[in-house]
Structure formats: C-alpha cells, structure tokens
Length: 191
Image 1: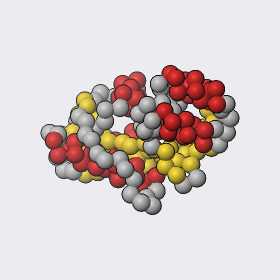
Image 2 (image 1 turned 60 degrees about the vertical axis):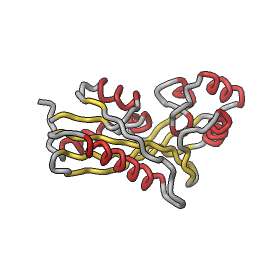
Image 3 (image 1 turned 30 degrees about the vertical axis):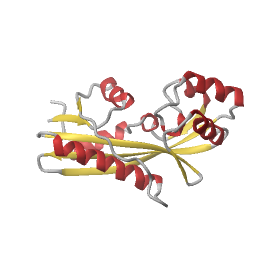
Image 4 (image 1 turned 120 degrees about the vertical axis):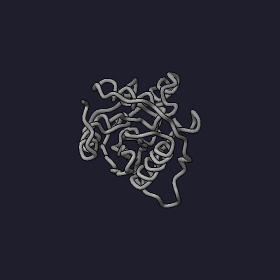
C-alpha cells in the first residue's frame, strides 16, 4: 500500500527518506489561524485532519495519506511560523532560557475505506539563555523562516537547545515512533 505525504515540508520528507519509508507527496493548503481559545493540541490535530482530508479527496487508493502540523507553545501561547524578522526575534527572546513544548498533530487516512488515526505528540525543549547578538546572528542565517517558534532543532538552532524530553523527530515535525504505530494500526507494511 502506497503512502502519500500531505505536506510540502522538506523536513518531514527527509525524516521518511532517512528511515527508508517510500512515499509520494501531494500537498494541500489550509488556513493555519488558531481559533480563539484553541489549545495547541486541538489546533495541530484540526489542521492535520484538514490537510489529510483535502489530499484524501484527490488521491486514489489503496493508499495511506499522512498529514501533520507542528506548533510551539509556551505559557499557553502558540508560536506559529514567524510573520517577520521582528516576530522571529520576539519568539526567540521569549523562548530564551525557558522550556517550551513542541506539539505535532498527525492524521492518517487509509484509502479507499477512509479509516483514520489522529494523534498529537508533545516534546519539551529547553533553550539556553540567548544573548541579543546570538539571536541576531541566527536571524541573519534566514533559518527561522517557515518554522514554528522561529527555529529548527536540526539546524543552527540545535546549539541553543540544552535538553529535550520526548521525541526528537517530533520537534523536527514528524513523531516517527508514533507514526510507525499508527501505520501498523492501519495495516501498512513495507512489502
């Protein structure tokens, strides 16, 4: 049964490629604006489901569609993708010296029967204290664009992270062990 990644994320595709899981890509775009009072867990599950449903409506089975959404949350505030360099600077300054959560929602839809699995995974990430100069150097790299919380653990920002509790791949954008469990539940095998 083929796998379809409903994401334009190069990071998610790289995770699957690196562990030898074959897949194709079919992207979808959804409005990622949180609803008023919506928790990060509810937001990522809602967005992952919306992305998966859009792709499942266009895909031909037998297949399993995989969609995900990742957000950073601190003190009840959701830090999505930065809208500007100033927004990224603000996010990184707030994350500095603190522990935040990275939450990824994943939805899988098996075609043609539309059986689905949806879950959210959370990983705690501890940032070192960042000086204004370190933040400026990081922003000059341009790496913060298109990344929840304005950083990528797998890149230059990895040097700012003193500890994680949970799945590393979740912080990158796709919780691999939980994904494998969900694929198993839906009867997928590599054969």
